[in-house]
Image (cartoon, rainbow, N blue to C red):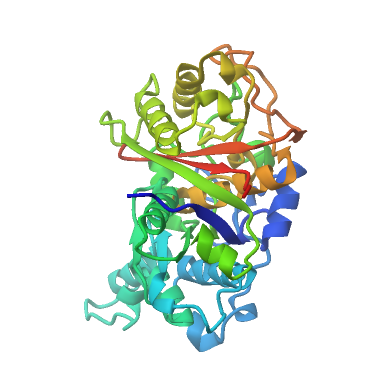
Length: 417
């Protein structure tokens, strides 16, 4: 069976750096930090008091008040970026066969704010169950894909992948496979997360996973720096319209890039710690390269998982040297989490958008907040520290790894006929 080509025809983004794709990209190339003191709740008693929140967000700019109250924040984010991407790809065309347009989304946690609020309200009551009738529909992770499907009448495959921080990339890989196997023509894919809550910050603090650099939030996410002390929690969403090439060509759609491969693997090692030698990271990149049918030396840029944790950054760097050999020193590598923070289940989506735009614009966004070299990293690796670099990017690989040992990699290529 001949596999079909799959291209990117629409993008949407709502991030700590900006609430549109252009604002997000402008923040990335200019090395802007999205980290600031938390405004969503009083964090004064928490070990970590800052995060990368979406700025200037008012749901009433996007939804009727009654409609917004039926959605958790992570679903609001999902619907907003899906709308951006659908409009960008011109999918509202009534001549399209909506039975062959799917929605495959990713979220690691889902409606955490809703879950927290309902449980606190019950605990503070007299024991009488008085739950909001929208409690369950607001909380469940799959509802994001459901809302997008209902809004546009897309009747193809409709579900959400949940694999912690790898969730959105898993959604992209599933979408890619459904299209290249000929099961659908178009999929609206991506991911959303809204875990900047008391439970989210407190839970990650208990794991000792978050940076506690409260005196300097904007420099707290510092991947591959000697003084990194944990990740910075982020929130937001991104959407990517994937489409079968001949279908896109027939309707005159603009094409951002081509998706050519996806890889998955498991560390099979520990529930939260990565394999110290990056074994799962090695396997997932090799699987993606094999799936794409390309050689390691054809890759120009890797948007790494790079969370700014002491162990994770080391394992990923080791894996890159293992997989790419001497070509590892010709690559540009960067962690855009240094600017956006870690969006958990949405990370793979916003980082895929960054990879696609790096290809389109010939610019590699930086890894900001590098102050001190760490002898654990080979100085010959180009982490694109502190300043964006211009270079031709024909092929970009994006890594996302999650608690539970879930690893995903996706590969995009500059589009040509």
